[in-house]
Length: 108
Image 1 (cartoon, rainbow, N blue to C red):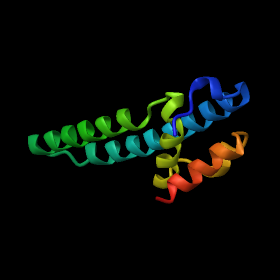
Image 2 (cartoon, helix red, strand yellow):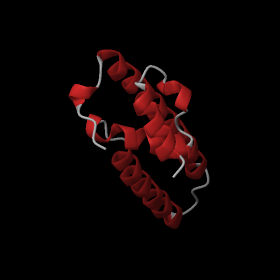
Image 3 (cartoon, helix red, strand yellow):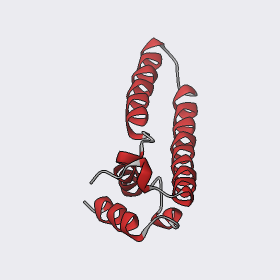
Image 4 (tube, helix red, strand yellow):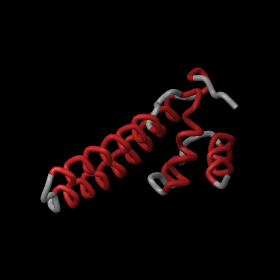
């Protein structure tokens, strides 16, 4: 189910970029809050390493998840919808077929 860049209209590309960026900003904002909370409780070296491990895992997950390549973008959107970082209505403007695929994949 690959959708190449050629199959995305200029309007769809703009909608996709905006939705992608919103989801990313939401997740990063939550991460920042978590880091601030964890950092405020540091009392020893063990807590520092725990924070480091937490950040390493989050970085790996976020960098792997937010891949803006049109061929896999519908899968990315489905995952973001499933995790709650993105809402289907924020993808309004995409082709109905693309929206249906994202909706179906997000329920899997």
